[in-house]
Length: 417
Image 1 (cartoon, rainbow, N blue to C red):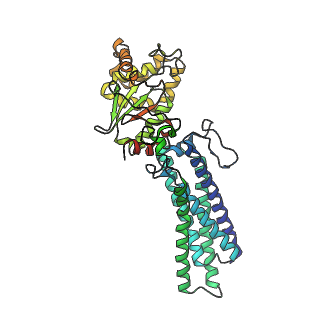
Image 2: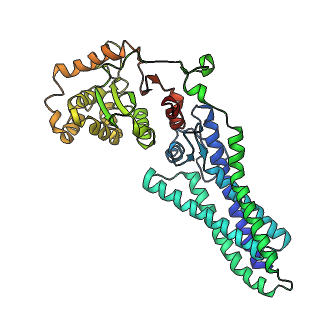
Image 3: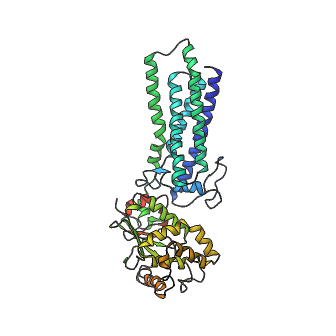
């Protein structure tokens, strides 16, 4: 094997090692959240040197990628799903082992190892291209750690391709070329090894991940005290909850307790819109503006100033309420700035400019009274907590710990699917 081929194998090994490192860190960040709590992440091109809080600047891309439905598969079968990074770990580990074997044995130029090193690079680069396009087109952000995986895939592919090309001369000039049968056997063995290496991390993960069913539905049989911090809460009645309605007509009933200026409400609203099961639900939105203007008898200070104005706008919107709520969440940052700055007139103008039909209705006494009536008919009888968001599916409150990574898993069980 020529020196130049050795150099390319070293580069391929470096790319595979980097990819293994980045995918391992991504898997670790995912598994840390299996306790159903929120943790920091290694969101960096140099991960592993201390996790960073999700609240810190620059972490939004990694958080968005983690919580998106594109970070894992089989989310309805397992809490949080099975991270795709496990497949990447197996593939990069196989490429690394193949590179080291080719370097140590001096046989990396032969057709079987050279071919499968190239196939490993092609598979890694193809997957990276797919996930990069999803990040740009669907998530509109780039996960920094994921970008490291994309870079590693590119290094592996380029080095493997160059090693394959330079190895052609070595194969032609080799004194004892491989027989056709030997080459086919080697190709078959490596194909099996590649498959085993790629899927082995998934099999190990599936054999060790616990069943979270008892935590998801604390009202279910056998759950009881073992359900942890999530207490069984059932609705006595859903009457009075539907101040705003939307979703799939005729689907299973879901009630969301929301504040129009609550960032967590916006995040849950978005995740439900991306969820396969979430799209099948028929929603009733119970407005709980954490604003002293509307709930002066409950709140001394406003947590989300301006949310009372937006809640009244939603009540006035009628058939456009769902569209208005989506518009509010799309412009949440701007509206929150208006609320914090007490720029309520500017907030009102933005709403009226988009939905002119609510202009006369917002300030009517009956509009504000509807919020209080809804509280009397639904909030007080069901002892609804003064916090947002809350999600009730089939009359049972979903644990807040299951509203992000475990959303699809929890929905499947609360819906009996």
